[in-house]
Image (cartoon, rainbow, N blue to C red; front, side, top):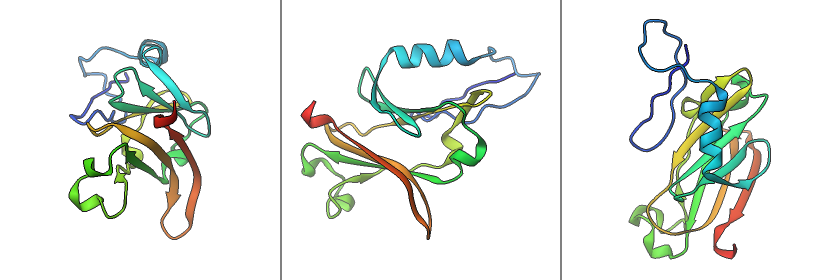
Length: 149
């Protein structure tokens, strides 16, 4: 049985197989379809990245996903419309760093994985995201400029 638990910051945890769990059984269609119906595709790539209709979280999704695909750490850099909105410790860099790791991913069915990552409360101009391996560099990088849309 696959179950989903959400953290306060909006990140979905990995599914857990536990026959004694009383949570509702979820499969790909009931979970992913409503999520994507309420979201807008921002980035089509190795991982598709969606912005939910409220604009308060990003949804990463990939078909044909294996555990090896999510081992490299994900970087997520948020550039605000107004740099003064950044936390003081991030102002020198010009972006907020919301990197996350593979434990943010939920495998919904064979090959489909999804993660939901909460965004800061300030208006966002640009999103830069991808994956990297420490010491080896970036595996992929994509961006989306919300301010020009």
